[in-house]
Amino acid sequence: MLKLFYAPGTCSLAAHIALEETGVSYEARRVDFSTAEQTKPDYLAINPKGRVPALVTDRGVITETPAILTYIAQSFPDAKLAPNGDAFAFARVQSFLSYLCSTVHVAHAHGRRGARWADDPAAHEAMRAKVASNMAACMELIETTMFEGPFVMGEAYSIADPYLFTMAGWLESDGVDPSRFPKVLDHRNRMTARPAVARVLAALKA
Image (cartoon, rainbow, N blue to C red; front, side, top):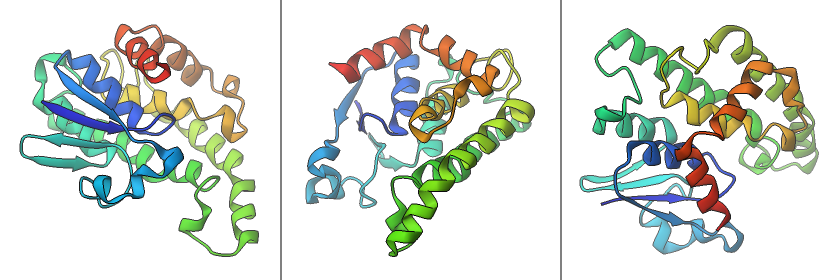
């Protein structure tokens, strides 16, 4: 059985939702960040990066959200979470996932993980001061040039949708008013009505 290691409030939510969308059996294992469980030997044996998500499969462990989402989409094609038979369309999905991972997530992380990039507390404060404008710029680009509607890639729901939903959920805490981006906000609201999303969100609160 697949085992997903996750933590509330992190990008692991995207993989959690994608797994739930497939309808397959899996185990969700919460990593307690409040006790720094992600830095302890037991978890580092699973993911030496000390981060979530991590997906344990019968062939080994997969880390990094884009890789996990792709694995889920390709392993369970009946769920139709990606255009697996169309190389160009699949590459476009991958392009969106990569942007979220390499640019949007990094913009968000500068507000909370400044020590990854600098030791000077003044530099950390400078990074935090840029988070709202950087996140807004990212969402503006998504709103105006990437989001096709009604789902991210157009008519078909895909692994891009739970990933955007996850990061759109960070906007308020990053000092960004989501109403500035009506397409992204409408998508976020509609996502909460999906049964799989509702089940995962309920489990996170349990």
